[in-house]
Image 1 (tube, protein in one colour):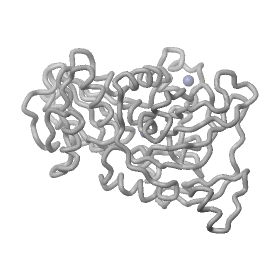
Image 2: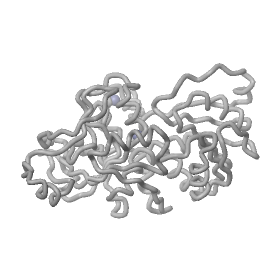
Image 3: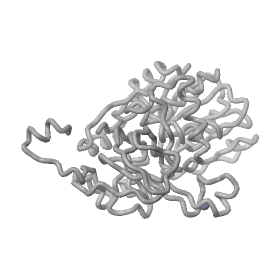
Image 4: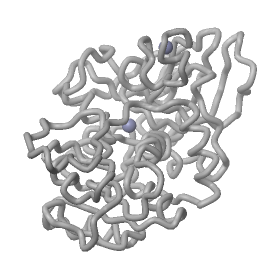
Length: 345
Ligand SMILES: [Zn+2]
Ligand SMILES: [Zn+2]
């Protein structure tokens, strides 16, 4: 709701308060509430949110499939915003800067994972929209060192899906290994439609797998440059060198394994998946690999956000108002989003 419509409704907005969609407990719809605008800590910045993408992980959070969320919680970890105020010790970011706030919100810097450049696995990491409040709101605070400066072209709703679908998708993509020519993607949503552009830019062939009969997703995949699109029950015309599974469906793991050639990698790109059924060892034999990807490092973000404008990546977004977050989540749950859903404040 913009200020004009607020005035039309005869309400006067308190300048120290903000609207947010709050998760009070998992499994119940988010509630529109008015909260005080948060105060940035010494190493944090206060950001006025321009847009926040809706990620499948948000569904896992609100549905209670991920343990121990902060409660109550403001979900959302694909945040694009403008810095309005900085904490006393903030040095590199200034008011007015456009920043992106990703899933990785804080790491300790001292655990054994942080010390060996695996901060994505930090033992004391905090995650935006899960263990820290996120972007389904008009304002948020974020640690300075975990914000990414955004190029102008991505400082609006189009940039939001890059912050997780793009960035963790890119990490999954880099885990497929060298010498990948034919790359399969299972689930052609926000992440795949971004990664297909990266793959094409690098001269790879994209094979898109969707739910059986989802012709809309298959034609969307072809529009985004896939050389082949079909159902996840089908075998592609050529064996794949690697596959990334974005859909949270464990059944797809043995299916993907049967479609990759010797030495091929199957990357599970999501944070949650239904159980993987048992399968014969011969499907894994010949050095096929199954692996997961967890979170992101800041280096992934810097690399990906430097690459995105060179391609340049375009995102296909479907916009919702903040108070429509429940409808947007439901549309994502039902596979009704083409590209990425974004809340625009
Ligand atoms: Zn750590
Ligand atoms: Zn995400």
